[in-house]
Image (cartoon, rainbow, N blue to C red; front, side, top):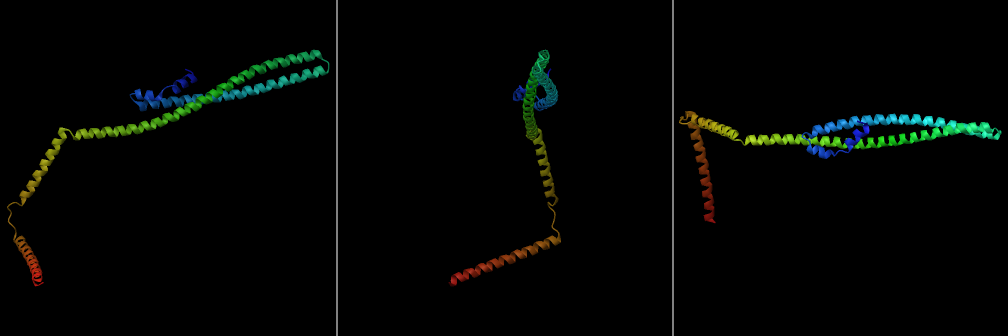
Length: 227
């Protein structure tokens, strides 16, 4: 398959449609990018060869045109000197070189068209490559997000499963048993002597605070009555 055929197959393809139908769009676009890169290298190499050939043909054309001018001058000289035979021979040589000039000019024009086509193809393919690489970057990001979303969904479904809920209930029951056992540790235990005295002191403090409140309330009532 020629370079142009391969290139046209790539640039003419509907990339979005191919990606939508692909089972693995990320893998497909990687293959497309690699194919585009390989084709771009080939086109640039062919373009460089064509440019080099164009320069070679141009030098050849310049040389023929010099010879054409040379024989034209010789024909003029022969005419001035009255040498018609030499003038005819010089004109024949000039004509031969003129015909070669015309043929080489046609070849040079064809080379110019080919080179311009190469350049257009390179520009178009580079644009496609840029689009494909951007598409690849977006696909990678979407793939990462989709993977995270999928894992999150699986975790949610797993958390909602009957088995997981039973595990939570078993854990809750176990904790409740531990709490009950902790409460039973001190159940029915008699207070120590120190704890009883601490309780008496606490009672005294409460009674003293209560008497203070009563005294304060009584003083307020007396002030109200006297007023």
